[in-house]
Image (cartoon, rainbow, N blue to C red; front, side):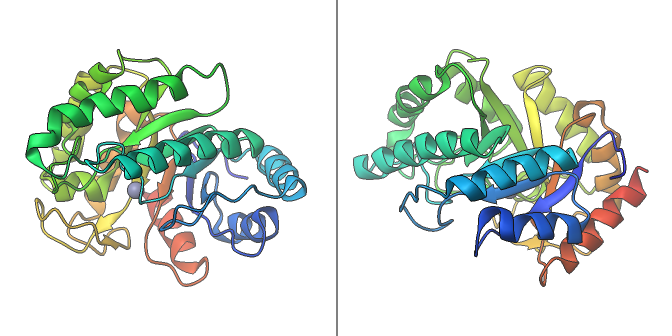
Length: 284
Ligand SMILES: [Zn+2]
């Protein structure tokens, strides 16, 4: 596999068996990094996994030198005003960490969440603290990676400077990292398309959370306008963000050595393979 300072890969399907489906997909897409769901992306069920598939996946990723990440269910919202949602979210993150450890994942990505009701904002940050601290205090295994959202619904973190309150809520715990999604940042109002815009946004991210907190990038172009609060991913270079911004992303010192995952539209592995080639051409 080609050595790159920013391992480029894609979100990877697992239906039919974690190793059985994901490893051939990783190879076909030309991925040097991977991200999987370990439970239904739009459900609360927490499947136990299959020990044999887990071991094959873990070893397969190791052999290929491919770092793996878990993406938690999209339903997770630890800022929710509904207690049952917070409880289920905590259980889902705990399950994601355990499954992530079993498959050798480096991190478990989850969306920052929203307070939904502006009046619930302070209580939501308290929930962030009470939910995350016990999980972060676990001695080893994957890191938790908070992904700023596209905004709307009184998001707890959408623009990068909002991450300060989020990290403050967990006393800047060393096991919390950041997953930066370009489509979310654009939707939240960061103008990444203007020359220098991506660089300035990443500078602001580092200024807010400090060096070493950015652990994963989701590189997605967008079908919508900057500030739209809409999260509709597009093929790299075919959306409103445009190719040049992704060049800035891959040249920024904060992304050096950091895996970059595309979550773009793809028929089988083909769209992902093309996006990985496209990104690689921007920063060979
Ligand atoms: Zn994402």
